[in-house]
Image (cartoon, rainbow, N blue to C red; front, side):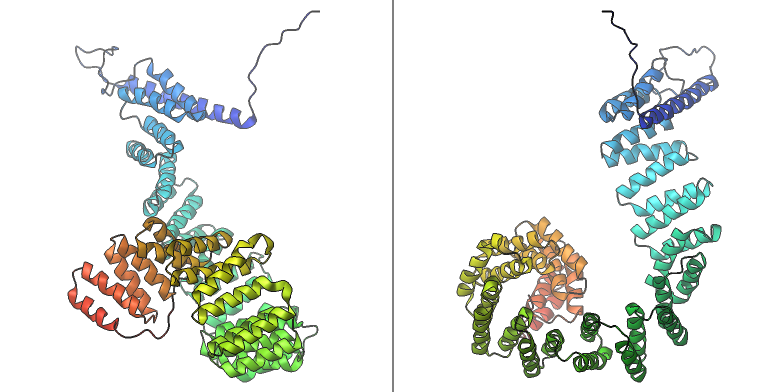
Length: 589
């Protein structure tokens, strides 16, 4: 049998072929540039362009340098970065001031994530060839990765001025200003992009977000109308327009916008809520009540929807007194329309608990359970309110009833029992019960129960002085819920108190503050971690900010006193130590 011999040919994919083509073109350009430089190099009397030229001379490279540079570029394409660097160094020994070689070196170091070296060579390339936009863009990317956002912004601005992809580069510059937390400068650049390209929806959207963030409501209204004029006229944008009118003091336009939305879709709940918000904040309660009745009379409106709105307003009432009366009025109106719904009585009970109306809360929660004995959350709140009223016997009586009526939810009741035992001064008994819940985790489907059990168990261990077990329990909470700010904060504080794993403590405390930036306890913990790390001025800033939130605990004043001592301010330290002698109104940590 005769075998057919086929010529072997390399098989490249389209992407690889494109890379090779780019490389070949690039090499041709470099070769032309180097050849031109060789031709332009002056020859002085008595000198010749010989192979013996010194390595640092600015004459043309030796003949063998071009193949070495080509080899480096192909190694770069193959991601053999160290091999490429070796080749480029050999070329650089002959041509130390060749921008293309510095750029290639920068690319290789960037591929290795050695950003310092990538930046050094990138800067050299830009200095040697300031008009090369590719070099400037590459350096901008490196600067961004090194979190030098101001420099990245300046580089993109430099490229934009060259006229190369102008609006794209301006857009990148604005994003760098955002990364550097310079919203005003970012907005100015986005506005300039829109002046050049009025149809640029991305720039318009970014400008709108910044105008809202900076509370430039009139500008935001103009920008939003431009976006709507481009055909993006959906209900969400119209709703935002109405809210901007309200914030800009143009109440009539706001109401007209909301009513136009409702005329088109009577069941658009966000429009109703936005209109309710406007009337409440404007103090126009009769208008709020009129529109509330109109909403509740709309068919069909489910109990779920109105309860969700009531829950939203009750939450807002805790931070804004303007919502107190409207929220309670809404709850009572819902009760009159849905008198057999257990959930609304529970919601009213929670509201009364938070406003320290203990007896009223008990009555509401009992009614909730009477209507629906399987409302487990109502049972839990009823037990808790009796603990708050120092009626521990009644709390344990209701707990026993809950166990008898719903034995299949024993993990939940044991978790509540552990919490009740902690509240009544029995941390050892609490720990024993909660340990049984934690050990049975594979049989418990409700993750919230496990989170609550481990959190309460951690507090019991802390009270018992079992610090290692306490840290492990908080660790389990974070395994179950990576965004649990209470566990982050408390674990960070434990590490700081014991002087352990301070870098991890810093990360945990920073994450907790990032997720809840106005929490005074979390700010104090972050400050205390900084203190333990020796960053005393940062500690001062954080703890002073914590006290500024209204946190009034002796422990926090002691922390600040110790910080002032380290900063050499004994007078302030003495003042804080005096404040620390005042008993705390209530434990918060």
